[in-house]
Length: 133
Image (cartoon, rainbow, N blue to C red; front, side, top):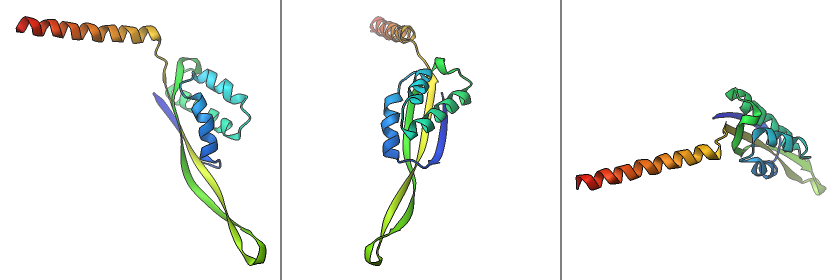
């Protein structure tokens, strides 16, 4: 498993989370292709993080899965806009931290083999306990 973290992106975390939810569990190559045609600004940053995580692990994009894509809130830049009668209103400019984790794709056949091995181990333990009694 490898990961990539991009900090202090000038992007609202709530807007970025909408995109991040869609690509979790996807194959990295498919996720990058999907993000390329997504019109949101956050898609570009998330695609960059995915490609960085794939490169950090030394993998190819077609052999890994996006195991998690987390968007955390960063610092908020506060600015003021002049308003009527000498008052001012606050403008919040949020930032986000993007954490992407990719891991090797586990095939369904491999999962079945692991389950079969676990069942075999438990049944042999049960048989051994019965023999001891």
